[in-house]
Amino acid sequence: MEDRLVLNIIELCLNVSTLRHRLYSNNIANVDTPGYKKYRVAFEDFLRDALEDGDTDIEPRVYRITETSFRNDGNNVNLDEEIALMNQNFLRYQALSQFAKWYFDRYYTVLGGRKR
Image 1 (cartoon, rainbow, N blue to C red):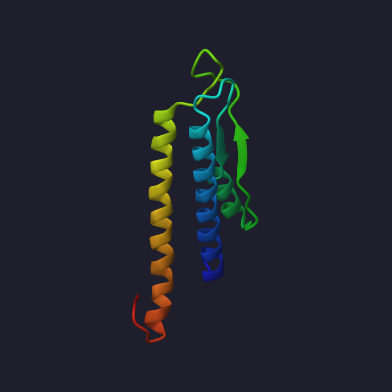
Image 2 (cartoon, rainbow, N blue to C red):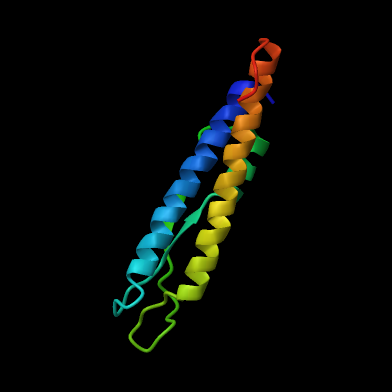
């Protein structure tokens, strides 16, 4: 895989992770709002399909889960689930950041520079 494509995918994945964090935060902020329905991001399946097809134009899709209700007031936000997903997303973001750093450190090494 060429370097530019790898860097574009890393950037896209970091942006999706940031989007997820905003949605999880919004869901948590509305945990007590009657009738509120949580949001999610669909991305990984689209990424896999796009890479198999050689496509590099990939966009995440934000959708709302409206079929379920977690409480009697119609709200479907489960605070424990949102916090767990937010923590998982945080770890994914950290891993992607470390991978990006490693990727750039290779060039510093090749060019005779020191690693940061």
